[in-house]
Image (cartoon, rainbow, N blue to C red; front, top):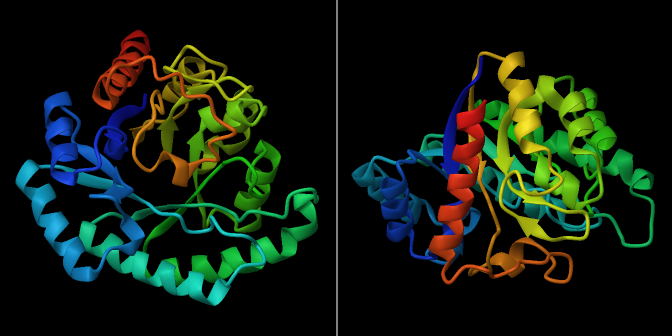
Length: 283
């Protein structure tokens, strides 16, 4: 039986980092996946800023489950030397925040082309990133997402198999649904590589809904994984149920349909959190 532990992208609630921590305390959530802190992306923090934010986290008793970095979220034809340097800095930050997990991606490919034409370049550049992370004892955790090489379940598995388990998976069932992919297939192919899980739900037309209300098959997958493993597994809440500061930097606004049915981002996140807790109560 799995032990599910909640974490959150609390920047969906507020851009003010201390208020993010206060919100997590209010919700009884002990972990955060760091992404935007006072409007600055985590990978852009200076070392001194990171130390100050870590002290603030200690004050509120919140631990980092992962660095929600943008590593690998560049064009496959981009500046890979600069990106490698960004990774090295991000690994320094992971040490400061005392987490062994860095979320990352597998590169955008040019629109109108076949992503498989870039497979060799993708794997070669991922290898360079992986070598640096391994030197530091930090896990690179690949998230499936639209318009990157690892968009479909089979391509995510290709990445995992290519590196023989050296790279880990962040399973995002909502992203599979959003991309018109089969979330259950994604789970079945990737379950042996899962490091942790993102919780959002969606329909293939881009509509974002609370966990259990869309096509991501969250409850069914969490039930299966609960029977499959006895590990502690982080579930990071990323409900996307309303617009929030920085959303346009995470997704193409033309792709997603955020309903804005909640008066505030906090109420939206409350609803997303309760939806997941309701699912877990039934497992």
